[in-house]
Image (cartoon, rainbow, N blue to C red; front, side, top):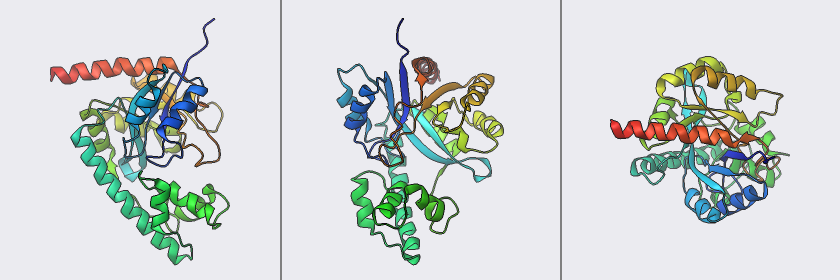
Length: 285
């Protein structure tokens, strides 16, 4: 009997807030026995080409991806994944550069607020930790841990930099419609990430459908029993593509999650079928 093939379509590298290089992500994915992966860095596509190069000849498929932060209805923050994007597209890169600039400014403002709380983290250290990638809250949390201000990155978020906490600064985000339209404009498939973090998921998905959403992350690292069934049913009800991924950030969080979300290869086939239909429709318009 053939062994079930799995994919992980939500992985971060050190070009955003993961700790592994694209090459390391590829090597670990192969060791995990994965058939395909997607590099989905926050507001950044620089890890895609190195991952494709590292995977060449290995049989591991690389799905070009990105993760965009967005505001939905009622200002609810959500993340939209874009799969099979034309990642070198000028419009996409211009938008990503704008988002990266606002991320840097936000990080500086958050460090200023932390300084007022006697937590002193130089921005230079954030840049060094980001290593040319996009600085984010997880970089700040890791440095707070290194400097002994907190006992874990979770504590950094829970006490200081999580939503609504004392050093939190709201990030500039696209609207959900802008994020979805951008992904579709560059030939990609927009998918709602980690739905278990959102409230009123049924009405949220209904709103996003009108805006052009094409999939939902039905297999996710939810840390609670059997929740994916809810999202699989939601996907079936609205004719959405079911995708899945671990949202692995390497060693930046408590454990390496790569490959632990058992997303069957059939979900990738579904994504490819939708991609072909989407691009055929674009060509006919």
